[in-house]
Amino acid sequence: MLGGFLLGEIVTALIIIFCVMLLSLFWLVGASKRLKQLRSDALHAFSKIENLLRRRHDLIPELARKIDLHADDEHEALNIVIAARNQAAAAHRRINGDPGRTEMMHKIGIEERRLTRALSHLLAEHHIPAEWKDDPQWQEICYEVSELDHRIDVAWLAYNDSIRAYNTAIGQLPRRLIASRCGCHLLALL
Image 1 (cartoon, rainbow, N blue to C red):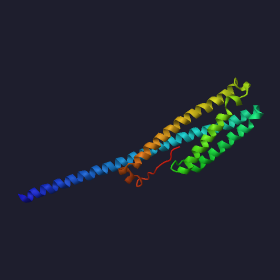
Image 2: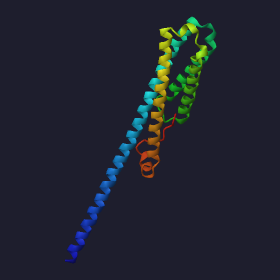
Image 3: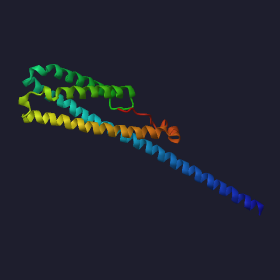
Image 4: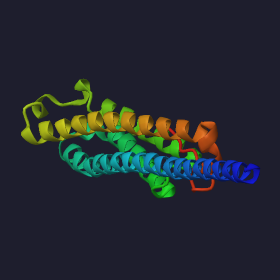
């Protein structure tokens, strides 16, 4: 009788240990999947920003052609915009789609903000000749730049939110232990 009682306790203990191990395995798989999903969300948000920034970069030659044709006195401001665009594009090429390179992400942020300021200065009211204000082509370019800037701001916020969620998840103690094993590392804010 005593042997049967002892055997029942051992079986119960083994079942409990097995259940704990199984639950731990499920938690590890779930935590790993969650980290990978958060990383994927962050990379997708970065991809959206890159596409919008490329579109803005592509608008600058069109803007330059318009200004070259009609405004000799705006060449200095235009040259500043073109230089800022080239610096921003070079920073994007160096990052090569990997927002994990913190120093390069900061460089992109700096260069893109410089480009935004240069474009704002160029398109400021006092730089626009009076005859351009009614030109549909000029209005379209200005609208497109303005719309892209707004969309970039929104995408930037979404990216930073996704990075915060991802980095916070990595920083939590149980997940921190598995983060490095599943290839997850901190990503930089813009």
